[in-house]
Length: 471
Figure 1: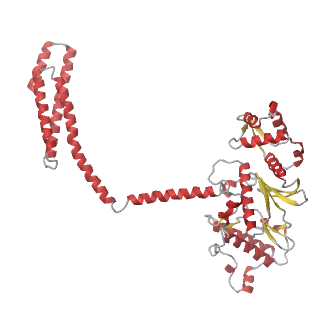
Figure 2: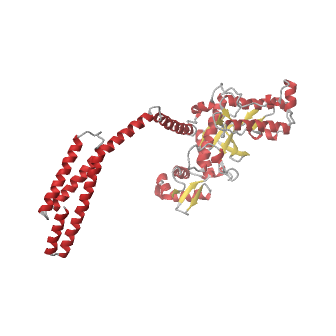
Figure 3: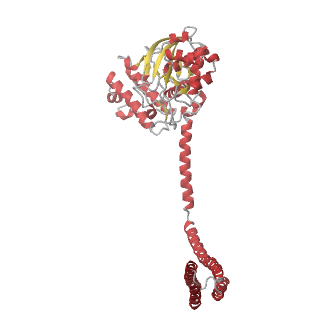
């Protein structure tokens, strides 16, 4: 979408108030409901809908009513909010022509009040040519949900922080002026991209300078990850300047060596094709060594100069985007190691002895619990027998006697020696007696139920006689 700053002349305070309301609503809404926009903007006399209609005319907002009546910011509306804020701060007062375009950003000239020309970079992630941002950039960290405006804001914040830190350590980078939302304002580099340069007076010196920058970055704990002829500016005096820093990673990254080797390979390949440099001949003239001497190796670099990836918290990149990822990974590693340590502690040298003692205690508990279970069962059976004895006195006396015998034997067994060899034999004998008593009681119950159903006195007398003979 083309940036037309002439529209800024026709936007009022209410227009920017409604734009800000939609931006605030997009923190937790993909489409901000119109009622929420009205509530946040709080314009008098219901003028919000009129302002929304005006913003839709200039394509600063997008309206969608497929699910509900909602609005969302476009990149043009986000551009106007950032430009308005920077103008109010006094960073610049005019916007000029577009001087560059890429897969992730657009670059414009801006002018200060005293006439100084600066460069304004507007990040525009989510273009059709480069939508695999989540897999190729670490802007999100461990987040799952995102939108392109938020990703652009993170990219701008990260680039501003890296540019500020590299400038403080003497690297040839543009001077970072200010940053707001997805917009970064920096000094304008007086030069040309290296890809547009056809001839150099001293290509060997330029090549060594560029390779030295790659190594110097690694010594400070950073890798550019996109160090090629498109991101290197060179002026008439063959002075080199680096640009484009959102994708930079630390040397502790798991793919750091791969990124480092790729940056070095890009420089070697470009200079060999464009300027016909033969690195084997160059090394023979200088030292007579092989080609591997000129090609820097990631493992041989001494990382003792300092780590800029740890110092970036002082320049605005406060760790909400980078340190959260490291904390998240460290917490996961600590949990894994803690669980492994606990498992190893449990499986120590005394674990076998502990298991044996547990098995012995468990066996002894089983032997002690078995007579208690028999006691409980026998007591319940004795109570049932007493209830049944109300039907016949003779049968009740006999069942009472047998229950008393059972209780006496059980008390004697409990007070006796638990380790006696005859304990299991007695328990089995008691169990057989209890089973026999239960079977006999069931027969009497069924006979009593049959008597109630039939209701004959003769059958009742005969049943009692059979019970007496059975007992």
